Length: 228
Image (cartoon, rainbow, N blue to C red; front, side, top):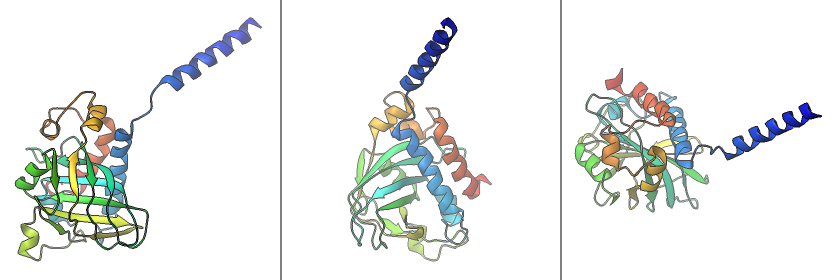
């Protein structure tokens, strides 16, 4: 009976310890979701983001499962992550972002849409690192070209600040995103890094990448021409 009591006590202690141990936060899980979204998009060579876009991009914003409304999609709210290129050509640790309002143009049904924004120049990056800015207002956004082997065909594409994409029900396409706002989610950044930290500090490499973010960095590196 004593042995049985000891075993039960040990099991109870183990259960309590397991229950008390916090699981990954929503912010950490979002890093995994962003990695999965980007990997799935790039897995189809004829449907992914072109290599020249990834080669020239200064930053990437990936927002899994933006909540949407009716048949003509008006983006309401979504949380995602932003990563920027570092001086050596690699990708930075992720900063969490929120997207609110705006329109992703025509979408074929679906309750959610994955959004990807590729920031193509330094000016666009600076705007992204601000506390909040409006897409299409402070930063012009164009529908991005699709197909990993697709070449830049117009001067407008080559000089766009931001190229935007969306995926709904498996359909991946470049779409114009107007009127939405992007802002840094400082609360979630604090959850990721254990302290208050600004987006510039994150993308400048002054914090360590959370384990959940390493796969996303690897995915971006895999498909970035400069990383091959």
